[in-house]
Amino acid sequence: MIWVTWRQHRTQAVVMLGLLLAITIAAVALGAWMRATFSADGLGACLARSAGAGCPATITSFVNKFDGAATVPLTIVLFAIPGYLGAVVGAPLLGQELERGTWQLAWSQTVPRTRWLVTKLVMVMGGLVVFGATASAVITWSRAPLDRVSIRLQAPLFNIEGLSLTCSLLCAFGLAVLAGLLLRNTIAAMVVGYIAWEAPTLVVTLLSGPLNVLTSTMSIPCRDGCPGASTNSVPPVTGNVGDLVRNVTRDGSQLVVTYLPASRFWTLQLIEGGIYLAVAAAALGTALWLLHRRTT
Image 1 (cartoon, one colour):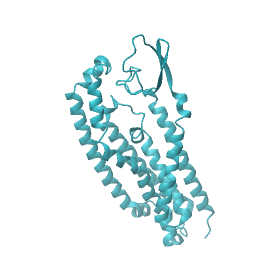
Image 2: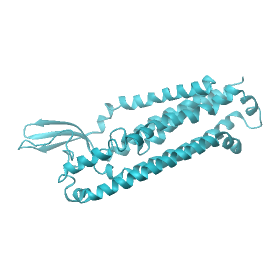
Image 3: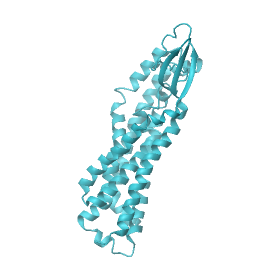
């Protein structure tokens, strides 16, 4: 089974390896440029000396430079990869067998069909996890200087670092596998799997309101007008670079700031990743159940 699975998916593995290599080259080049600029601008010393309060203009210039046109192509590719790659890899896994009729040979061997599918899933998903984790690690390394002076809690950066990219990739894969089993057509399953993958993204977006329970509130004395105190102050009005300020209101001589601390990054990653993995588990579990019951 392992040899057969490799033969069936080796082209996809080579394409994924080539794509990962291209992402790595682009990320390393961008990371080297970013680090050179970060050092030349003296941002490291400024952050150590004043937590960014002494060089807001330099921080703004650096963020605008590297969180804009310079990184848009790579960001778009990484943002789209989970849906497209998951659909392209997942849809043929069952859809192609059913479409071509090769299931009649594959499922009549001594290997039970459930074990057949589990073996294929373990191998293919293992490759996807390696791809997603490696891509996320490379991007995280590349954008480390930018992470020090910007907000990681906002899309699209939030969706390509941490656990999110890998979990989203597995979600798209699981939905495409199920679509292939139900539709028995590879191309149609790719399209349906990709569209279905958009649903968890919508769920995550709709959860932005309930997730406000993770926000914190602080009061800041403000007797002189608090110049520059707003939701987009640089650095944030909380004084901690990376905090996502949601709201700033005045209460007498104080400012009341509602914000999402930068330290909540991994908490939110676990929540979003958990949603993606739950959808993937439900889709693959349904596919296993249907395949076990299938007799024709």
